[in-house]
Image (cartoon, rainbow, N blue to C red):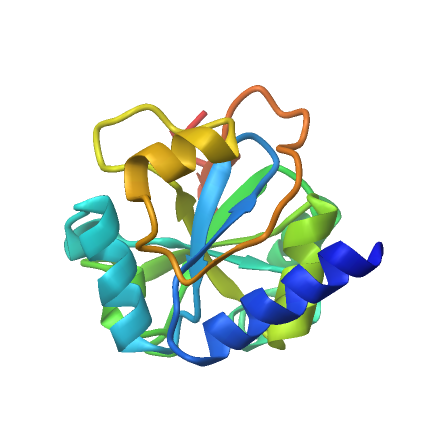
Length: 187
């Protein structure tokens, strides 16, 4: 990792540890991230996006082990189904069993989880030491940004840090499916 990116990675990891909200490129669009276990950070992210808390948020991880606390209770066949789809653009709705804050799961009994295929997101999760909230870096109802300039136009200097980089090659955000039924909620 180039020194400039490594320095920015540390800045972002420190901002996350301090209940901050950061922006980073993801597979398809720029995203906002924060520590899912910091109610202060998650509420701030929701406020920035003007997103209602009842809708829930996605957890993104650097590797499967960061989501083991949610996956290990699933039947082995379902664990295999999820794990062979990662890393990549597959987000799965899995039961949260009260293991994530209400601000993250919203009104649902499940939470959306994914192991990212974007190298910077994966490295950021590793630097943070766990999964992160990942939500498109836009105000609710506005187009998801593909550039840092668009992120800055939405949020100005209200973010705690930015991880520079390029959006991956995906044309659209990840598919969201229920782990039990395979019902697609976002294609």
